[in-house]
Image (cartoon, rainbow, N blue to C red; front, side):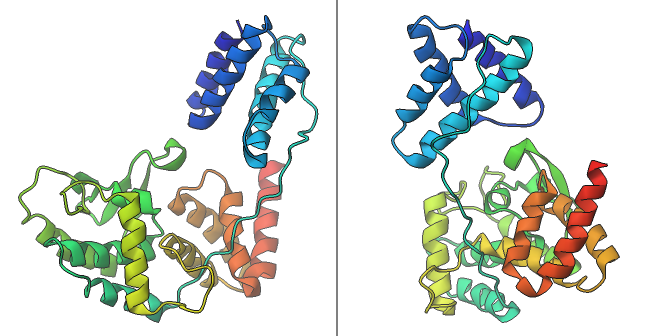
Length: 303
């Protein structure tokens, strides 16, 4: 049955490190529709009809891409599964350029966090430390919010567990970041709660995404960060800023760029250096030297 083929395909991809949450749901939906029409093999007409049922151009494109990947996998085993043509639902997607914070802007945001209304005892310290930690490590916001007390090792290293793409990694802290985090943790441990997370919400649990967005907007306003911009800077732009500043340190030295590029990709938890390469778009003055070095590095890895 086609649904069995889908489950096998998903299991193999997940064993390789892919999570496939949405694609797995989509492919099961496709398999059920195909089997309702008596089909046990991937058919071009059914795949196109199923993809066309999606409500938006981007979701139609996603459906087509996912079923096309399934078809290639199954066709290699059984040519009765039909390979799909190029997607007629292709859409052009562009990632907006990140906002790169100046050092004084980060300092102003940390100071603004310390002026927040104290709606719960740790609120000011939570946000000042969270902003400083992301700015100094390039952690994803979700990774910082998911840190537990046991993830902060006594040697000044953070254990980031099961983050994006299911990867885990160790993140060494700069001495200044370690000092600031230790100072916060000393206050955090005085709070009598059973929750193990480093950063606590008002209800002593994980800080909700909606609250992250609302509070950061308040901090950004208090700090008067780029009020004239139509697209306001985001908390995640601190991660982009970290990556950009790290690359700037090796400007002009192509051999250093190559080494730092791979190290930075690992430090940020990227599965592919192409994700790190994207940060170069935010710093045009570095693009020529760093992109040339990065391209050389990637081509060498393919030989």
